[in-house]
Image (tube, rainbow, N blue to C red; front, side, top):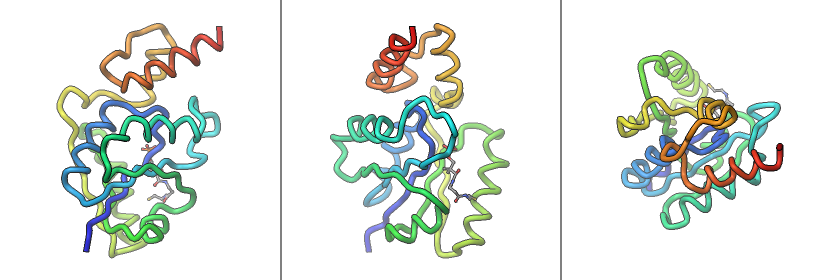
Length: 162
Ligand code: PNS
């Protein structure tokens, strides 16, 4: 049976840390579905169609990476998609507490689903979508920290605002 993994998140925006984890997951699992959570934040910077389009464009060369959106409980979505694994990235010890809580809650909700934690390459361990938005909004350089398409879209948004 093919092993299908779900990589859930907000991806507002997709960072090179996410890209690194997805590329690792695509090598490890038969298929990895990048699942973008609907309504995670009341005012996301990127709309759902924008986030889906960015991720689909970035991963168009990887045939076993699919990009989808989901709503409601993650474990229900995992079951609906016939997946067996949830992938989460762990950057630092500070991520661990919340990730551990989520993994155990998901395990309780559906004991047939396994959470697998993956480490990104060291140079991405300090990147988060929140910091990217903050640094960019304040005029800092995010080159190399996000895919070029994201950098481009951030600039477009900045230009529209001013
Ligand atoms: O990118 P994020 O914000 O760290 O992703 C968090 C996410 C989407 C994985 C988490 O909020 C989630 O799974 N939400 C779906 C609702 C759910 O199942 N909640 C219970 C989790 S224990």
